[in-house]
Image 1 (cartoon, rainbow, N blue to C red):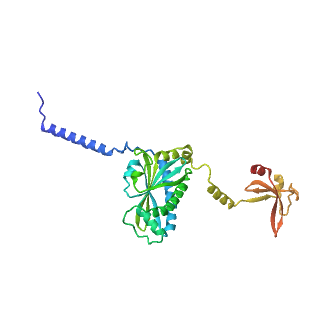
Image 2: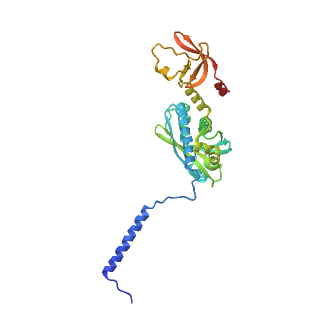
Image 3: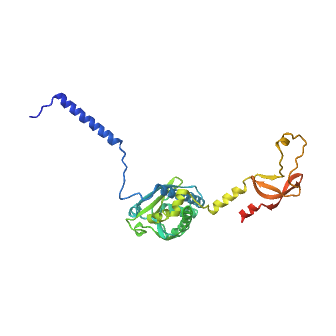
Length: 328
């Protein structure tokens, strides 16, 4: 026969159940949950992402200076984000009509897409032709003449892009074709991942976007190379020509101590303690012998001491043999 619980026992059971429920809820809140999308795995590491950010931040600085000079107004460019998405998602995010440039790049040979707002392209053309540069509200495909004018601007953009990538590798980029409909642009299969770099262009308070879509395989082939990985981990091993020039200029301005040793002699401790004012110490060197000239306490030259314009001077007669061998 089942035991009948008293009211006190029932209250005790209900209290224990409520306490265990609260404890479980608190433990669940303390657990950290990280979302992971298996359809879009992170293929780019943090170190590689920082490298891409440095490259395109340099691109924003250089191209904004060019646009400011050409448009005769202040142009600001900022890097917004670097995302890894599927190429189909990138194409679907573009609303026609758009301003798309398919560009060739080599080595390694590949293609990438430069997406620009038609409003920005029309604004740039208007300013280049001396117009007031009023904000463009209507969206339309740019004309053939506007495409010819914008080709010069895009070529300069590609030059700055190649210059920014010099941090990692050298490549040449050129325009292959222009498209206004994203459905006609297919640089990789739709299911392939791409790296999309989003930049904003601010002109008089009006903001437009500028996007670059790189194939992930192309970016990976460059960043994953052993030379680039060494640069990421240890920095640049060999200085560039500009860096060598800067180092040389700084070295040329570095002061160096020059000392001439007139001679040397050996005396006893008793003679040293008995020295008085006016005593003469005979040196081992003769007056017609070459004297050692020290640069930062290193014997570098041999010379003769004399007078020049009422100042003591030394004339270099020969280079120390050790310095000759180092120069060879």
